[in-house]
Every structure is written in C-alpha cells, then in structure tokens.
Length: 483
Image 1 (cartoon, rainbow, N blue to C red):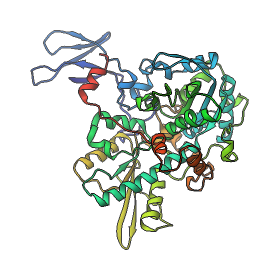
Image 2: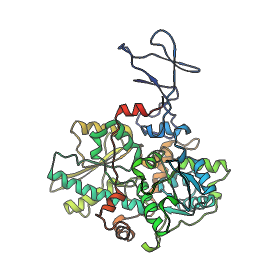
Image 3: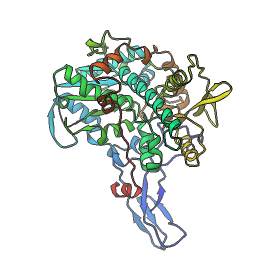
Image 4: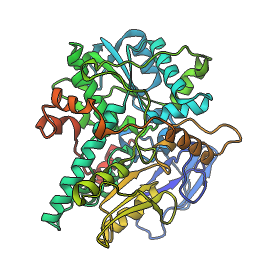
C-alpha cells in the first residue's frame, strides 16, 4: 500500500520544531500495483484520483480512529472524528450535568465523585493565554472545574514524585542487570512518560525497541491508580463510582488513558475516564463567553489528610519542563552507583537544541552518558543508532514534541503576532520559577508506599506503578484502520 498526502499538509521550519498550528495530514489509500513506477495522483476539487491506468479513479479518504493514530498529534489536533466519544468536551459536560457516564464497555454508571487532576504544563499554558501568574491560574482552574460540578480538584505532584522515584529505581536495576549480562536489552533505558513516543515505538519498531522502554507509568496513570485505588478506599467508594478527569498538554494522553492496559477488569473501569487539554478548556471558556481571569478562584483540594499537610500547589521538578526525568535519574545514579553526591548537570547541545547530552566522569573515565531527545527527527536518529549498535547512552528522556511537554500538541496556540518559539520560551521561564519539588525529600511518598502499596518493592507497588507494552504488526494496523 502506497501513501500520498493532501494539500492540507503544510511545511514549517525544517528543524523539526512543531507548533500546534500545523495542519493535519490526511492520507488516502492506494493499492499496490504490479508496475514499478508507483501510483500517480491527481488532486481535484472534489477529491483525489488515481490516474495511473490512464483513467481517473476516485479514491476514498482515510478515516483514522483514535486507537490507530501513530501519535504525531497531527491527525488528532484537526478532526473531532478521530477522538473517542468518552474523551470529548461534550461527554465531560454531560457527566458534570448528569453525574452519570457510559464506560467503554457500554455500561452506564452513576458517579459518586468527580475528581479533576491538574498537570503543570497546561496550567501554565492557560496562565500565559489569560495573562495570569501560575498560582492565579491554578486557583481559577480549580474554581472553574468546581463551578461545572467537580467535587475535588487535585495537584499531580505526588504522582510525578512517584513516577520519578520508580524511574530512578528501575534504572539502577537495569544498570546492574546489564553488568551481569552485557548482551541483555537493559540499556539505554528510554523514558516512557510520553504516550506519543510509546505508541510510535509499538507500531513502528515493535519488539526491537520495547525492551529498552521504561516500564514505570507516567504521572497521569500513576495519578489514575492513586485516585481509583487509594482515594476510593479513603472515601468508601468503589473505583467505578469515581469519574477521574486529567488536565493535560497533549492529545496523545487520551490515547494513553484509553489503553486496555489501564482498564481494570475486576473494577470494570479505566484509571482515567476523561482527558481534557489546554486548548479544549480554552474552547469551553470561549463557548460560554468566559475569560479565565474573571472566573472566581478556589483552593485545590487535599484529600490525603492522613499523609500530612498540603504543600504549595503547582510545583516543578529540576530539569526539563517535561518532568525532569533525565536529571533526576542521572543524579540518583551518580550517587548510588559511583558515590558522586555533587554531580554536575551540564548539558551539551548536539545537532540541535532538542538533542542534548550530559556525562559523568569518574577517575578520568566516562561512566554515565544521558541524553534528552525531543521531536521525531531526533527520535528516529536515536532508534537508528540503537539498531546499528552505536548508541552510547545509558538513559534517554524521549518526548515526541520538540521542546517537550510545554510544547505539547494540545497547548494553547500562539496569539496573532506571537511565534511558537516565543510562547514556549515564555512557558519555560514560568516553569523555572515555580516552587521546587523534591521526591527524595517528600514526607508524603514514603507514607503512600507504606499505607497504600505495602512497601516499595511489593507486588502491589509493581502492579500500581508499572505497565507493559505491545508490539503492533503493520498488518494489524492496516486491518484496524477504517478505509
């Protein structure tokens, strides 16, 4: 099967810097022919025509379902038809209005508690859009969601802390396993918090690349487990009685929330029921003729009273605006493996600012080499190095979007006269000024490990905080797509 692309495809900067304003790629199906010259396509006013045989044959446009998306965010950002119904603004508003929803198995359920979890990146996106400081934007968002009917609006720092700590521990184990068996596919460990990258890996590189990807869940899915498994117990509710919404910077988070891996058959529910993005929330405000700055604010909720007092809302972690995975794992590994308690994080840009690396030397020898690879061009280069056995890295923080999550495909678009780069720079500056969270110093996380997970190394901790991946054969993709 060959592919051709419509005139909706727009070329932007050739350095792989993707802005949310890019148009969708709409492919059309062309069956393979016995000739070696390929197919010839004519673009008419009312469609696409194959003219290879000397006569015009109209082609049918492709319809792509959410599960079929190759996770570049391009096809998701421009067409509502590719989004699953349960991930829409309309469904969210219906649940708020009726406190009832229909799960992916077609079962109608009554909702006892609506919980909204806020991620920092889209919160900053809305802060920039409405000229608010981050703390104001957080309170305004809490007030807005509560005005719609949310019972609890939560900060996700606890989930981010758990995700980082699990990634640190997983890297340490992989490094030690690699020393025991150098032929094993333990390193480089590749970050797994970006569902766009994970989906691309599963569908494009399959079993070759999957062993390298970290099994630690993303903060969104850790939060999902925390809300459905722990909060439900605290509130004496079943997991199915809680409707969990996450506020995210990326449409691919809808893909992640919809994965079968995050559906609990025993509890008959997903960990995350609905994902709403920054741009969708902006649209919801526009439809109701509201400006976020005019919405009455409210405090974030803290339903974890047994874990201690609430810390400051909306915090950041050291490192990149995607969560700082490379920095945290690097510093932890430097201390645990080589006794370096003051390792320096000095990144060096390689071919472009979205591919940079940091190294640790011990006694004149390089002992650790980490990298951050953002954007599909850099991801493809990384994968090719792995396939050739030329990758020098122990760990790579991989994100599908150039500049990472602050430039997610569902962040608010730049205003007229503002470039995408300028907006991302603004968000990065805002992120760097947030209060700093330190997972290692958290007094709350150890209590969660003890009270909820039966210890850090327990089977329950592994089940709640880790996941698996699945290679998808290309033939399977072709069968799933609705041509």
